Image (cartoon, rainbow, N blue to C red; front, top):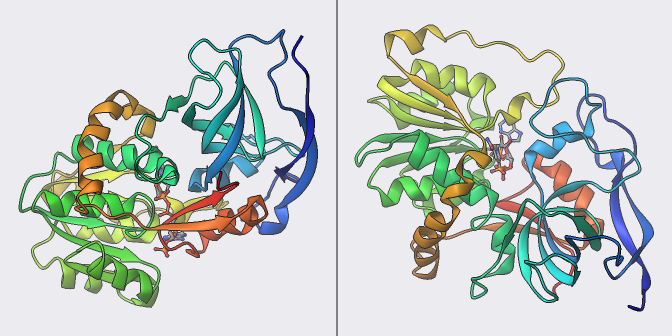
Length: 347
Ligand SMILES: NC(=O)c1ccc[n+]([C@@H]2O[C@H](COP(=O)([O-])OP(=O)(O)OC[C@H]3O[C@@H](n4cnc5c(N)ncnc54)[C@H](OP(=O)(O)O)[C@@H]3O)[C@@H](O)[C@H]2O)c1
């Protein structure tokens, strides 16, 4: 008979479904209790300690009532948020996991979680890099950048590449992939500090602060006098509409995200779609799950780049679960500089 240890732990929960734009006050920290072992009757489960939690833009949509068909389901009011994180196994009845194993994948926003039939957990074998990277460059943002750029955009050396939300979790990786391939790369970001980081840390050729540009078309034309071959789109809306005017013949647009349109009741439409025809532009949307099968190949490529400093990664780390609401909601105002994550415990 295993001794059952009941402990109190903190959780970040959604108070009520959000209408419109989420605020920090829509989330709260509560204290709950959990047994530190998997109940004997539950097979194929792991009890984990959450080490790092990833703040991701899609979580905004999970805070609204589930009315529209959505890629991910809504959070439940009063229950902890869920999302990607880095975990350590404390107890297991799952044949593939034992106490002490490290993994990244789907977990909950609380100190410990019971995960039954884990389908979306990837074991961590490379522990000589920061574990927090598995919320970023070695996790979902990394695979998304890799698949979205290399598989969807079919890039070639010398092409002109534009990246929006370029200093963020995904954008900074896409830009550096493009530079390593020998492309010309420009990016947009929402502050002068971020623009400086794009040019001086990530080696973008050009960058601009879209919040200070009254004429986006002029800003794009100044970066791309010859036009854009590849647009890696994370923001949608006005930026996408203006990029359409600046695409080159047979250009590619990888539709990764549309953060400027999340939680808007009546998003305005695009006016320049005709460009797609005249310029034979290929527009393709994708989701990270399309590329999970490439994860081992991706790790083989990215780990040496990180170790040799050929790709650098900037993180914005919130300390403790208490920082969760500020860290998560900050994504929608551009508060984060680099990949936003929360460290639950440094252990
Ligand atoms: N297709 C998929 O499977 C998939 C997977 C993961 C993520 N995504 C999408 O990829 C995009 C980037 O995600 P990420 O994790 O790398 O996030 P991130 O870039 O680290 O953070 C979001 C950034 O978006 C920018 N932003 C916020 N509101 C904006 C607005 N109204 N207009 C323009 N920019 C705005 C902010 O940067 P600035 O300061 O530059 O404004 C903010 O820092 C998101 O759209 C996300 O939903 C898609």
